[in-house]
Image (cartoon, rainbow, N blue to C red):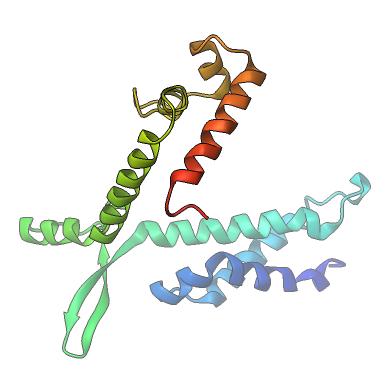
Length: 195
């Protein structure tokens, strides 16, 4: 029981681990604190002071792991879906174990956002930047243009490491660095959005 004065670490860790998660899921911060205290209690008998390690250093990962396991278990139980309510949109818990009709299954699929989907604004900005990049590349010398197009994968879709570019162009690594530095400096000078 000599380590009981270290109980403050699980409250701090609970706020760090579950801050945003507890706000949106209805999961109580006190539950994380409780899981952290159980992790702390499990770490006490395993601690060996003879190893020269402080107890906080030893116990902090056990507390964090206990809280993380609790969050993972809670996330595995449900997902959240937007529903229309009379006072505006809200969240409804949808349990994954439910057997869903085809219509409900399609609603659930539509509610899950694709993390790789770009907004129209992002697509437009990316397209404009590529147009400006290609315009700047056209203003470079043929040597600089060929090097940069190969090095950064514009020709074959694979970004090549510096040593790979050196081998491809039959140059030494130091000369390749010099060529790349000059080409990048020239390119930066031609780009309108480069400060």
